[in-house]
Each structure stands twice: as structure tokens, then as C-alpha cells.
Length: 135
Image (cartoon, rainbow, N blue to C red; front, top):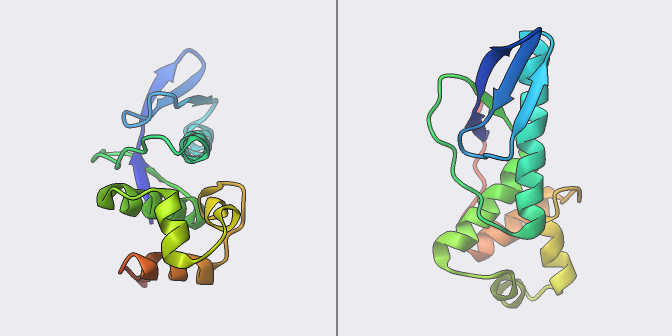
């Protein structure tokens, strides 16, 4: 699971939520529960925007309060980081997998419900495997 730190501060009649790793994240809530839920949504939207642009996704820093992103977005971000770490592009992944550009682009499209076997193939092509951990 991928968790990003958030800051929650009282703000007038509610709470303001920001994320130190994603400066575009600003959200709020009338209650702490609402602030956390809205903060998680805002972090997920920020990551989705960066995936859409294929643009600089920072690794999460350590924080006292964190929110988890969905498994789907988490896998897409992990795949992005793996390409980045290897200095590879999506075109390189197209060649490695023998898939069309559209198929590879869907691996990173935040609104596309990529199948797990497609993630398995992409990570395997990079010499990695998806591991599951029981809670």
C-alpha cells in the first residue's frame, strides 16, 4: 500500500489538509474524518494528474499522519517509478512487451481499470514481481 503524509490544521470552522510531497494538494473538511477522506481524495487526484502528464511523481516522505492511495493508482505509480529508476520511457516498455503504444499508455492512465495480469507482465518485463503482503 502506498501512503502519503498529510498535514491537517484547524482552519476557521473546519480543517485544512495539505500534502508536503504534493504541493498541489489542498483540501478541507468540516470534521477530522471528512478532512482525512477529502485529503485522501486530493492526494489520489494529484497523483492521477501527474500520471496523466507522466510528470515527476515524488516518493512519499515520512509523516505522522498519512493517507493511503488506491491499489490501482499505487501500482501505476510503482510502475512509473520503476521506469524512471531505469531511465526508460514508455516507448521502451512498448518494445520490451511487444504491445501497442495504446496498451502501454493504459498501464499509466489513472482512470483505466488495468487488469492485474497486465501489471504482472509489465513488471516482469522489467525483472520485477508484484508481491502481496497479508495484513
